[in-house]
Image (cartoon, rainbow, N blue to C red):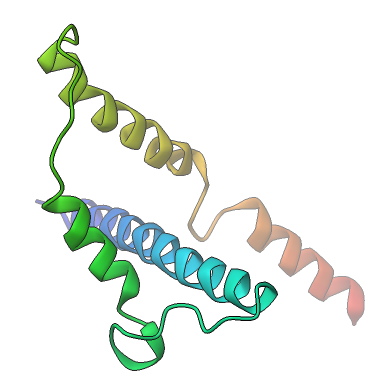
Length: 115
């Protein structure tokens, strides 16, 4: 394995974990804002100030009973969430990240104009 391939795999894993973490943070913030608007406390029982509430939700979903319609195809029923998650994460595959992206060229050009 070349160092470039290792770096690309590391970057991919970093972006994947960042996306999952940002989803958990957004759920927490959404609950806190909704609680503020409804004049109640919001999530506060799990962890310090309710910070572990998204993790508790994941654990609850893992042990939840799976309800599948009788006429549904079992294989497609299991495959559908995988396809939708893959499409959601693939949307970030086209976002350029590196030394030669348009945003870094723009920053360098803007810095030269300011002088």
